[in-house]
Image 1 (cartoon, rainbow over the protein chains, first blue to last red):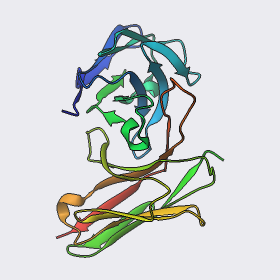
Image 2 (cartoon, each protein chain N blue to C red):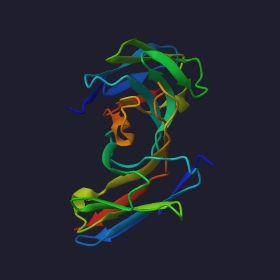
Image 3 (cartoon, rainbow over the protein chains, first blue to last red):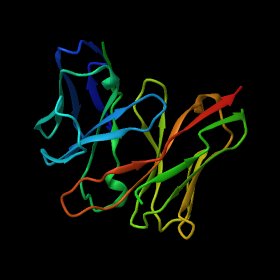
Length: 117
Length: 116
């Protein structure tokens, strides 16, 4: 099973709202990622969690707040977003240093389509 | 040095034809090169991947060719089908220090259209 699930599929929010995106995987992966993807562009890395600890923050504005409650779950808390934050938000997971180069493949979820009004 | 350059930006192929997408990189530390396929409104899905010690890898109609000396790799889709119409991203990553997750560097993407 190589499934990463994300909820909700679609989210519309105003600039003053607080909302959360959720990601879940049951593959035993110890790395989880948040990406932002604009139309016709590649995914852009936002955050990386390794062993439930934030290991990479790609200078993301503080209105995006990640959380990794356990090894299977990843949340992205949203507050005071701007219309330019509208995008597809992707979650991914992978093993870490599995001993095989191709064992660290990242598996992506279907994404949450976020619209900020 | 972290860039991966991908071409063409868009590609139109007749059904049954061969689709070829090219990528080039500069960072010789990259040691893993996956290709992802993405349909509209969906997340990227791993299609096929290769290591730099292998010159070619084939899975069904999909083949990666890898030229280490030229720092280039390409995706060939044989007998292209309308269902292959999607956006394709090449990527590259490097083994990090122990306990660290890999980061993918993506190419800019190629929008493939296969005409029936």
